[in-house]
Image 1 (tube, rainbow, N blue to C red):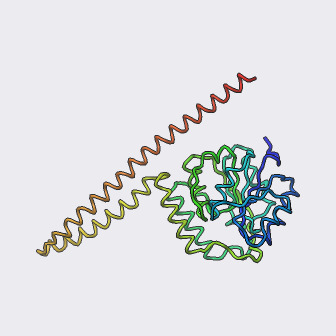
Image 2: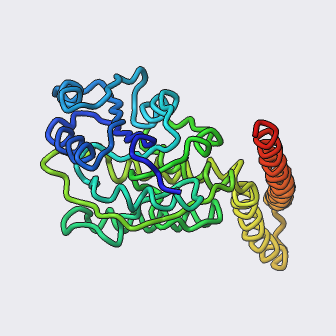
Image 3: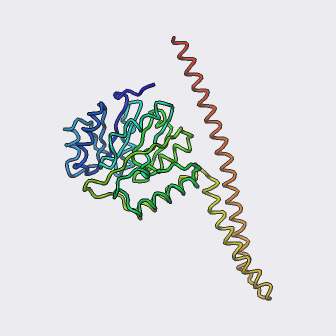
Length: 313
């Protein structure tokens, strides 16, 4: 199967990208892509007007934030394939075929990995370290190492998008997409792409503030994606705290010093920790059963679709 250009929607979320949006749209049009959709976050520099003149379909988002813009745009796209990238000039149209290739062979979701092919100066040492930490934390929380979960270069099938329950309104949207893709057992492929320096436009991402939000999102989403990690982390922390206090209580007791209130607190901490950890185990069992049920339902749906196709023929 070969993906035709007319079946692909190029989705570009923008906010004050007037310096780069025209050339980016022109590059995609020269490659034969006709469906170029710009979702603009109320830019004040004329980005939307420039994008329209360059031949893109432009919509102004209703809400606020990158995540909100992407979620709104997904609901407006009808093409069977979506290729999404930032409009700031850091990603190249030349990598489009690399991104779309895995979809031809059955992938549901493709992530463009920037960290092994970035242009000199495109990522600071802090950026690289932060990305590595976040990728490792994501693996611990969600069970998959996806190499670059914060990449803004993504490709989807329309069917896979219908299985993602997206709610994040800010820069956490890429993290949520990755977590939802893992939770729904999508076939995810990671491919290397180039990553260029920003051409003079200031970044909208604050490394420390947004990094904290992303890490918090990874942990919060683990509640439904990996309950054993979500509850187990809290339970283990309480249990360890109780054991440490217990050692102190026992040490004083051996020296004929009784600490009744601290003894009660020690017991409560250890019991609470074990109970919360048990919630994690139970949640993990229910999640495994839920995934198996969904997998069987998908198989059944595929069989029904085949039967309907045979009846029509």
